[in-house]
Length: 376
Image 1 (spheres, rainbow, N blue to C red):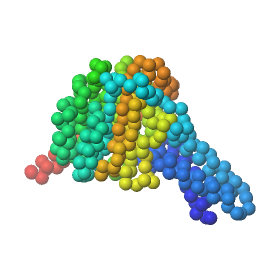
Image 2 (tube, rainbow, N blue to C red; image 1 turned 45 degrees about the vertical axis):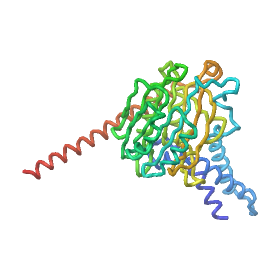
Image 3 (tube, rainbow, N blue to C red; image 1 turned 60 degrees about the horizontal axis):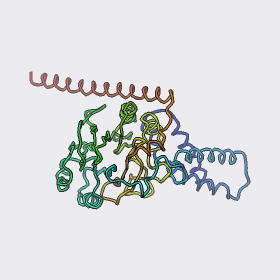
Image 4 (cartoon, rainbow, N blue to C red; image 1 turned 180 degrees about the vertical axis):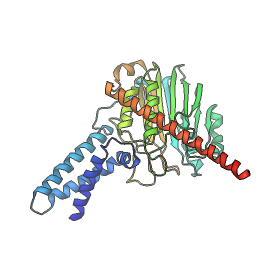
């Protein structure tokens, strides 16, 4: 049973490791597999309890620590189950009004994936008002040209660096901007969508870099980008939707802080996980693709769509706006400590972005000088 003790210690260590307030990827990565840690922990707890050996002090301490770790993991993931109170109301049949609805598909397509037809089939089946593709390059733009006749409003940002994005809309868009908030490599789309009822909805499409050994060494820029958008939204007196692959899970401290700062709601709370990544590994999945919205929206439908060749599943969401929902739903309460933490994270991200930009400029300048020396 030594392996049970090893698994137990691993669960305890990983749980409390995630509490360290640092941004390095090897720490923030512990935010992601909470469901997997929880399952491992429960299995270990059962085996420890039925283990046919005399109880001693070390075993008792391990069991108590494991129970504490499981309690914390449950606290983090339980809100995304049916056992929790729903954060977003469901639109009842007698309330349905297509003119006040907006439907959307979000899909991180994975740049080298060439199974274009699978996503196109889903788009043609569900006929969403908005389609947002992430990691889409010129090849994907060309492949998706078949849907352009149905989507007269388009915002193409084809890039070969895994951060391209394309927005297709049946609904009129205005005041559209492609912004590079903290990095010249990472675009985001900011626009206003006009619903069939004439109502205006502010839309933000995001895809920041994840903290990982191959991408960003820490989560500083990702966290700051999300909080910058949240800080802008809190001052808006307008309907709003934020969607995209945020490369963060719903229960992370940054995502929860973003919700409190922005006042936006998460339709998954009180319902179920919408685990979109990794599509190829059923036992290693978590929710990276998100839709957050203002309190005047309620949920009509939310569904994870079938595998389309990417490492992400697409997500289909239908929302409906109305004053009645705004009166029934409450945004998360923001504290002064939240505001201070958000501003500190934003400032840290801005400083890091400026530092990285200076490093790039210095490298270009040095390369230019070296070129002159070689020419001489």
